[in-house]
Image 1 (tube, rainbow, N blue to C red):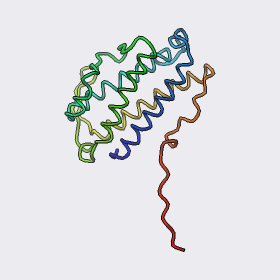
Image 2: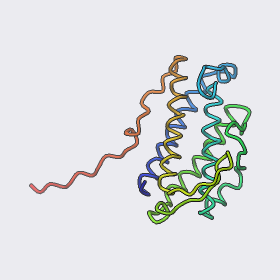
Image 3: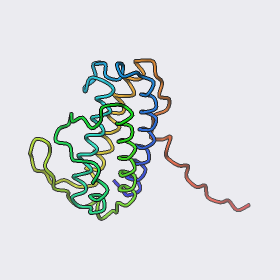
Image 4: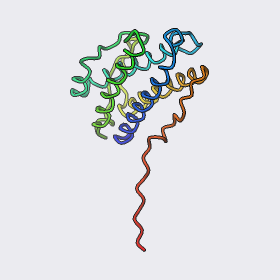
Length: 181
């Protein structure tokens, strides 16, 4: 993981979450909460899990980043992977937008030196770990993508087309070398 890749992944995360929540708004409350056989059951619970996991990881990352710690003051640390952060899609969407702003700002400030350091943390099962921060940031973004894939499948099965969801959609075009004629 490089600082540039972290910033790109934060941009992708923000873009995809906007599109995912917009698509989910086509569902009424009953359809949002309907158990569709996904790992977390419903579309709403899948979206909730992504937000919960992101919040947990950001609190872990904040242990080495004081500025991130300050940004997370409005985001209490969840005590369960199934914690309910919001009661409605509108509330969860607002939480998601605010969380994505924190992620974008944090990722844009990461340095290669920070990403090379180990991060010590305790997982939800109480097990202590020390792992490379760059690899953990890779996991953080990969986890989001994994569960957004599940959510987009649930939407597709219900007849809601998300359109393009590939990372390549946010990768900027490379500058072309200027040719001398």
